[in-house]
Image (cartoon, rainbow, N blue to C red; front, side, top):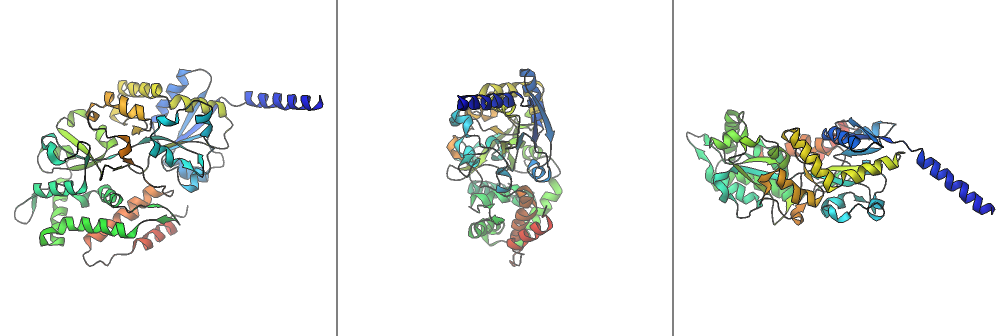
Length: 415
């Protein structure tokens, strides 16, 4: 009897604590759309209330704040410095009815860390080459264009007069993201290490291929680069669609978010292919993930929001209201990208973005990035891309090593 009453008292105490959980919860995010999403959630029921706080980098903010949020929805959460702050979400699949198979498995695996599902994927983007609709034969694949096809098409389009380009197919040096994408496709494999690891030989191969772009047919490397720089200086103040439609360039690089927030009336004469190789399309770094902080007290409220958000019906409604409010002219899709829910991307997105019809590749084409260190966006922009540019431009090969550049970046950015 004493044991029975002890268990009863403990159980009642747990129920009481459960009932005293706060019904309000705080979300940290770097995606402005969640201000709208949470308003929609709050209006859909009268029990829980979500509050949103925007930070340019919630991952960094977590290390600086003594009062963490209940929920974080942001890029760059998968690094070891951040992911350990979140509770396991496996019970959502086992007990709460969230369908594990509704997610793209490659994305879901990025949040499976140390044997637990610590993060859920929210959205992702794909790299694309955009070109005139009249040049639909630039690629043999209905979904993908590879690097060699871009180079070949670009070279055939190039036109010179008086040692200057009058039109140019594509300008790799003018687009750092394309240079980085090339390194990724060649297998440079940047990943979290101590602090960063990569495949040096594959990075060197990517740089060699890019250098050959400017130096094939035994032409002058520096002369070609200078002519391309002059062309960019003269013409690239115009938006890319105008340059394409005027016949000044053939290709421009955009990720899916940029392309589908481009004004529709300016996309009429444009087509696109995803950039990839061997039936593989690399996902853009910085996909959005969803994590519940391990110190949250608002468990029921956060759980309700989780099940609400990762619902096909909810995401369809969010897309519909975004279109009605014309938010889709600013933000693409769900949280700035394709939804991590397969049925939403494959069945619902084409209803809102008709240009996707016939252009959505099978999900098994998607190749997610490696786990990358916190601060990767800055490292990529300020270290990796300038290194590739310097390697291409410097024919003597006397370029400061990538190892030294990374060490210096970490020395100057210890916080």
